[in-house]
Image 1 (tube, each protein chain N blue to C red):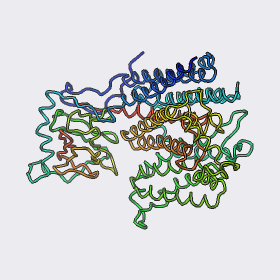
Image 2: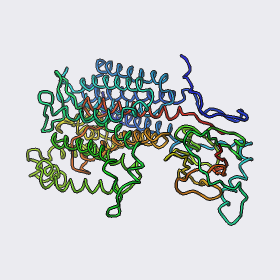
Image 3: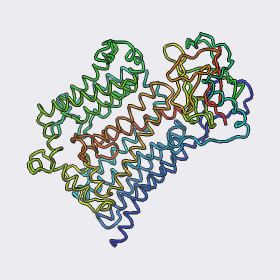
Length: 173
Length: 465
C-alpha cells in the first residue's frame, strides 16, 4: 500500500470521526440552540394581549385581577387543577398531580408550549415542604404571580393569575 | 413488532381535545440512534482496518469478525430499547460505542507492536470484557424499568458500596498491583470492585440527599458565615464517605479517592444549592494535597514528576517521570493530524494501553483526533447533565448529575494527568482504556442514564402547537 493511499485513508478517518461528532451535535441542536418556534395562524393571534400584560403588569398600570386569596396550594392530596384562563389553551384544565410539572418549549416539559414568549425551560411547579411551589427556571420573559415577577420559588396562591409566556393560568381547588 | 405501550396520562383533560396532541413521536429517538450507531460501527471497523494496514500492511479478517460480534451486541441493546426504553436518549449509546471501539483498536495496535497474542493480548481481553459490559448494560436496561426501584433501596446501595470497597482488603481475595490494593482475583479473572462501588455510592447519595436536602440546607448552626448541618442529617453520608476515604488511603489509590470526593461534593452542592460546600471541599482538597505532598513519599513523587518532569533526576529515577515524558513526546510526535493509526510508536510508553491510552491515541490521531474524542466525552457528559436538568423528580436529577459527573471528573483526572495539567493519578479513561471493571461500570452508567432519560420523556404531558 502506497504512502499516499495511507495518508488519504488516515485523513479520511479523522474526517469521519468529526463527521460523527457533528452528526451528534446536529441531533442535539434543539437543546443547544433552543426549540424551533412553530408559528400557527391561530396561536399567534390569541397571545398578543397576554405577553403585553405580562410585560407591563409590574409597572404603574393598575390591573384589576381576581383578589388573590391568602391560601396557598397544599400538596396533601387535595385535588387541585390548573385552569388555563388565556392563551392558545384557554379553557383547558389539567389536574395538578405527581411531584412536579414543568412548563416550556422543550419536548421534555409536562406542559409543552411552542410560542415566541415561552423559554425552552420556563417554569416548574413542584411539591416542596407539603405545598406546591412555583419556580421560574431563569426564563427570558419571566413568570409572574398576580402581576409581580417572581425571582425565587414561591408557594402557589390559589385562584391567582399566573403568567408564563403567553399563557395565564390559575390553580384552583 | 407492537407499538410501545403508552402510559395513561395523569392529566384529566376537559374541553376540546382537538388542540392538544401528545408529544410522543413513536421511535423517533430510536431511529436517530440507529443511524448514529451505523456510523459509529463504521468508524470502529475503519479504525481496525487502518491499524491493520498501518502495522501489518494487509487486512486480517479475524479481529474484524470478532468486532462484528460486538456490533451485533450493541444492536441487540438498541433493539431491546425499542421495546423497554423507546424514549431514551439517542446519543449515549452511539457515543459510548465509538469510544469503546477506538479503545479496542488502539489496544489491538499496541498488542501488535508488542507481539502479544492469544489471551496475553490485552485487546482480546478487552473484547471479552466489552461483551460482558454490553451484557451488563443490557441487563440493567431490561431489569430496571424505573429509577424508583433504585431509590427504594437507598441504604442497601450504601452498604453495597462499602462492602465492594472492603473486598480487596480481604486476604486471599484481594491482590496488590503496583502498590495499590484495589483488585480482587477469582481464578484468573481480576476485577476492581471500586468501579462498581462508585455507581452504588452515587445511588446512595442521591437517595439520601433527596430525603434530607431540606434539613441539610435549612437547619443547623451558622459558623464563620456558613451554615453547618446537624450531625444527624449529615451523619450517614459522612460515615459512608469516611469509610470510602479510609479504604482508599489504605489501598493507596489516589485517583479513586479524588473521584469519590468529587462525586460527594457535587451531589451535596446540587442537592442543597450552597456554594459554600464547593469552597469548603476545594479547600479541603488543597489542604490534603499540600499535606500529602509533605508527608507521603509516593504523593510527593507524583508532584515532583509533574512540576519538574524534564529534570533528568526525575526522568531517570525509579517511579520517575519517564512514562509521563514519553507520553508527552508521543503527543508531540503526533502533531496536528497524527502519525496515522498503526504508524506511530505508542508502545514506547509504559502501560500505553490503560493509563496512557489517550497519549497513544493522541500520537496516532493527532490534535484533531484528541479534540474529536474530547468532544465525544463532552457530548456524553452534556447529555447526562441535560437528563438531570430536565428530570421530573429530585432523585433522577441528582442521580443523572452524579453519574455524568463521575465520567467528567474521571476524564479530567486521567487526561489532565497524562497531559501534565495536574499531577498524574491512576484512573481509567472511561470506555477507552484497557480494564474490564471500568468498562462494565461505565456501560452500566450509560444504561442507567438511558433509563433515566426514558422515564423522563415518558412522563405525561400536554403539547400546545
